[in-house]
Length: 253
Image (tube, rainbow, N blue to C red):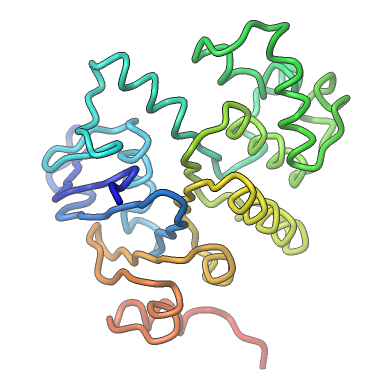
């Protein structure tokens, strides 16, 4: 099966930096699977997510979408890519424009991709909000009227309104309290199951990874040191760094 997203020998360096942020990265994401990227802060997880989103370009290697090299100047390919790959960001407070009503926020992918007019988008927005457990009249309200968990549901509705194939999530529950985290993780699992979504998630929370992701890749200093099934990586880690990550997880006495 052709991976929907693939990194082959990828390295990336930010402008002005002397060293690569990530290097030697080879990673394949197959349709319908869920993959977690884990590691300490500064390990390169978010940089990998930016590469997979097409927001950063590699300084070496290749990013592929449906088996073809991702070409930012290929407008037709990028239009398919933008519709097929959407993102949920970490902070539900800063990722939603406070000046716009929720309906306009959720409809933004439909308008920017030319999929629907403002009037035509309304039923899809209502369905997307219902799909994340929010009432249709939420479309007429502003983000500040909602709790953090509800705002993240709005962000998920925005990411799924155009029926993407891949959802990339950057620490989607880290800004939420424990009870709300559980509910949002359950929502992501339900959306993945019902829609056949492919999920790539950056997370520090190994309990979230264990409950949501089938595969895990562990990053240390910009390199993948271990990858495999989540049960294998977290249950019987083969690399000392992975064992240190697991040992650092707080446990009740």
